[in-house]
Length: 361
Ligand SMILES: *Cc1c(COP(=O)(O)O)cnc(C)c1O
Image (cartoon, rainbow, N blue to C red; front, side):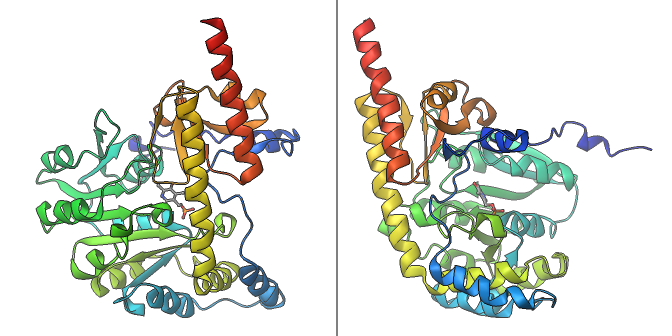
């Protein structure tokens, strides 16, 4: 049989070490798993309780419109109504669905390095990926992105804060960027890490998507809410985009467990915010340790930090991190902020090499 040629360059996702270890049956339980930007804590008790309540009812289909969850998400975002909320099997599906609304064959622009899903979706949808390098300081290159827009451009994807660099564009600059973009180009703001932004001015970033007919904000329950395993994400947009996105969404893509757990977690969002504040504090502590060890690192607004320190050295200290080589930063590691004990391990690991270098000099 013949295959679509645009799929040829796609390689299977190289999974983080911890997945490979568990697939091989290696006991990875003694390692701190800081590979995938997950939350170090399980779902909130409220979400766990909601999950156990629905288990006996999993013979039934869930609400295919996901009405209750969409309503609760709208209530958490002032100015939004249920009709402004998109949902999906992870925010990955939300991204896929909104890109599916665009006329085929055009170009998609995004900063690079960024999330590996973007080139993958472009290839699957038969669109041309136009990655634009981050600035020298690894910042989001707004001017270069605007300069890259052509008559063929269908969308710009801004991962903000950006994974894996952790850098971000302040809200005023996002607004200026949206205003400068042609109205027929869709702006997708991937805010998977928005809860970890340490800047009060970023509050209510979703209002831009409500006010502007070519902007979508995509968010997820996989990171700050600690529900990565259940696969649930959402988007905020005008009613028109949300209506169209619902037309292409796979029927019942958000399962019953995901719907009730995400609803309970969103209703308990003060506790989610508390956990995010802990992550922000611990991120500061990690960055301080990197600074003290004279390691190069990129100041981050996510729940992870890129640091110039080999993944294999971390592994010797019982820590699994994402290898920088897989993310466009050879010789670096992306370290997810873990719980106190895990972060302590990271601090010890970089501290001891720092001393070793000084002794060697
Ligand atoms: C983790 C992550 C997501 C979330 O993906 P889900 O499908 O919701 O689990 C989205 N975008 C970026 C950049 C991410 O790092």
